[in-house]
Length: 143
Image (cartoon, rainbow, N blue to C red):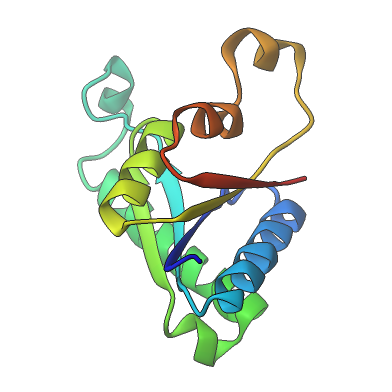
């Protein structure tokens, strides 16, 4: 029985994001579990890349991403259900941040989307594979 379901969205593939969110909502509803939705932004803060962005760029990206998550959840789940969803925007390495958010929330189940792997994914490992490999809770993968 799940008490908390974490839905990890990339926000780069609208069709896959909708499928992942719909499945996460169904699984959360089965046990009347809390539904959390997370997206992870890359961290440019300490790298040489950060010099190309204005100081407030990260804050604006978090604000815009949070609004995008809320809008997507409202569109897919409806306003009433969306009001109960916790929308989380983290910054860092995707799989590490997903696992940290899951640990902090006491997540029992992570729902994540997976793309068909490219050759580079066999060498580096996609985020979904890393989440599965390192997670302390169950992971449901949506294709």
